[in-house]
Image 1 (tube, one colour):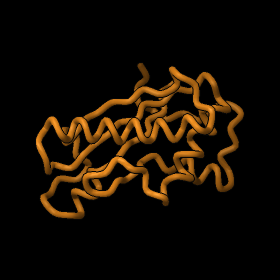
Image 2 (cartoon, one colour):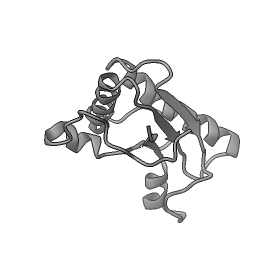
Image 3 (cartoon, one colour):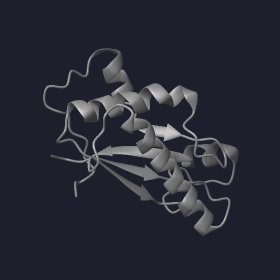
Length: 132
């Protein structure tokens, strides 16, 4: 497995709107939801096209949840979130084997705190490109 270090793909032009979308690596979710929010669909599609155009590229979709709910529930919800992003990417031609999904539940919060701001930042899927 890779080191989690993002590396530019060979032959990928990261300038322009596509590059701006590819620089976004975190997809946030509403409370108790695994549905990709409309404002993130273009980002997910851009990463999907990037993978389709680079068959040797591999990513890991790391699903996360906030601290509310049982540990088991949050693991399942974070898995559903990662799978939802993966399923959307498949429409862009992503091949099986290019994407790994991992469910962390509430175990790796990006922001500690017991308020809506922290919870909103912790409900996410991180797109991690693996080193070639």
